[in-house]
Image 1 (cartoon, helix red, strand yellow):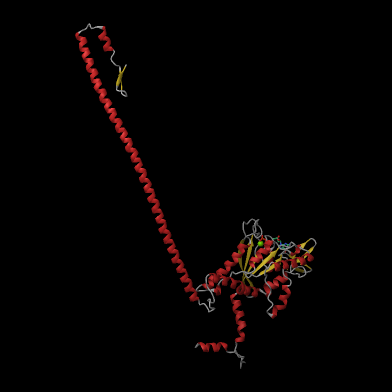
Image 2 (image 1 turned 90 degrees about the vertical axis):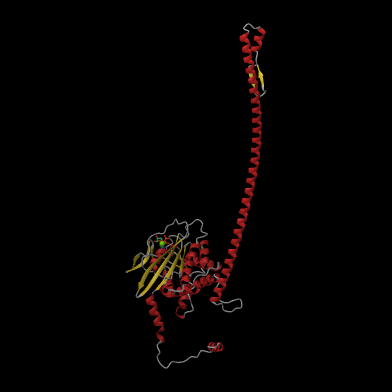
Length: 444
Ligand code: GTP
Ligand code: MG
């Protein structure tokens, strides 16, 4: 089709036509329902709130079952996310429910980083989904979607105001997940205090720019109830798995010495409102908002970070192929630059080492020459000394021979003239008794 034909076709006004008889596409909604029922649904709830605030009890109460009974540890060094998945069935509808607990939230002395593991967990689920989407062989049909659809934020019923930890955490989460704030253990706060507390919480959320989930009012069927419920936020809830007899009926309640708090009594708490809004009316909207708003934002930021764009600087559509080519060129260029840098670094290093080695060699050579000179000098001195000693020895030997000759002559003379004069005797015995090597003379 030529470009002009295409333009005319897309600019053409749509005409309304009536059908001559039954065609059958009115069964499309039924087809969708039946397909969804066969596939089943997944719904993932994140519970954030202090240890012991009543998270597990509320989950058990909401789904009318017992998920967990064990207490979480109060001694975690950091917040840890603990997901648990359950298969539930009501009529013929299957629900794969994942409840994620922020274990240890609020238990650390330094709470500055408490929000971080929660944000990271949410991002990881988005990342996993994105990776699945980007695969060549995708299997989104049977992919277990673990993206968080709703965060129930449990507020401690202090009656005063939100803690800074609550504000910081909700602020960090509001662009990533649908937040429904709830006042936990609402039976521990009086009715008038609760009313004021709700107003205070909402005004604090607004003044700190925290976006909480608003029940949608664009669908006529639920617009009215949703707008009424939006005005009731945050819901003040009571959880209990205990059953108490009220009249002749067994109801879920908390029994106190002064009376009974009925979980499903709307004049006692907002539990029914929460269940109605979360499960019966807006579950699909929560799933949809997660996909179209929060995941979309994550995906957009992530792809932009990777260099993908929708339009080029001239506002022309950017094709994936072009983006890939540009990125590839950038990458190769960068690789070449890095290679060149490394090569240069290597050459410089070799030069430096060579120079260092040469310097060391020169120093060694100098040292060797110096030692050699000292050695020669020493050798020369020793040689001189040796010569001196030799001369002295020769002189000594000559004298020794002379003395011996003299002695033998004297002895001969004595034997021929036994009676010699005293004077001669004296001369003979007064011969030197020792010879000094240093002076080369005989000493008495
Ligand atoms: P961890 O998982 O250990 O962090 O605790 P949790 O937040 O799951 O609290 P859990 O549901 O285990 O409840 C802790 C205690 O609070 C239990 O003794 C519950 O009976 C009690 N509790 C739960 N919900 C309520 C409530 O609505 N009102 C009151 N007064 N007590 C409650
Ligand atoms: Mg628990």
